[in-house]
Amino acid sequence: MSRLSHRNPRDGDGFALVEAIAVLALSALVLLALLTAIDLVTRNSAAASRRISDTEAMVNGLAALKRDIEATQYFVLGADASDGVLFVGGPHSMGLVVAGTDSDSTVGESLVWIEAQAEGDQNTLIRSSAPLLVNTTGFAGAQLQNPVRLLSGPWTYRFAYADDRAGFLFWQNTWTASQFLPAAVRLEVLGAGGAPVVPAFVVRVRVDAGAG
Image 1 (cartoon, rainbow, N blue to C red):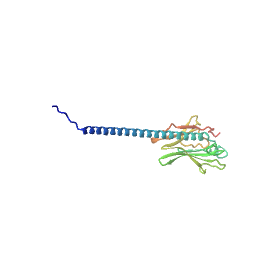
Image 2 (cartoon, rainbow, N blue to C red):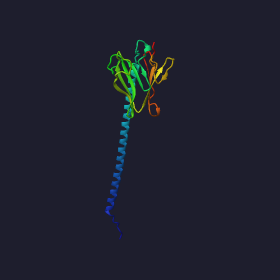
Image 3 (spheres, rainbow, N blue to C red):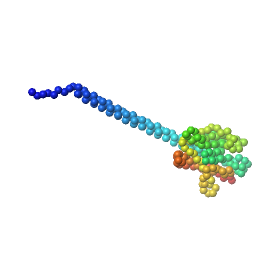
Image 4 (cartoon, one colour):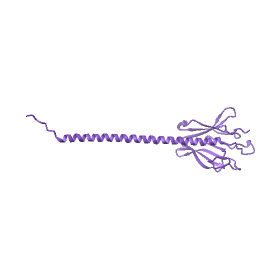
């Protein structure tokens, strides 16, 4: 008489339970991988949006700076050019007279002061303006208003001014030729270690830079 092996029904139940646990674990891993991928995509999308926003802000700021420089006016403080032209140029600030613009809400010329200022861990290039009055003697006593952020970031801003009276552009960090306007203005936006963030931004002064 042959023996028949008797199988415990609970053995099948135990195997099914192991399979279910394995499926749940695998599903959890897939879900975790999916959530990680979604988080990575979200972060990359947010970073890309910030880069686009920063780029747009820089383009708009440089465009505003270009408009001011191109609108520079040759304004003499006294009766003739020997009394000095109203233009101040330093490595981190610049003062100039520009033709009236809609942003200034003025009809005639305006004083415009552009200066780099520290704001926490950011450095900001700020533009302020004031109407050019009959008794204006310089930028020191001007009531500058309407501050606008042209550029802002963890950068260093450095201006330079071109003298072309020798027949070529000679760049200097300050403008001391009181009877002349610079032929061009250059702005460098520098990151950590002095590396340029963007190519040097150069704008020609459109008016006759000489005194006569």
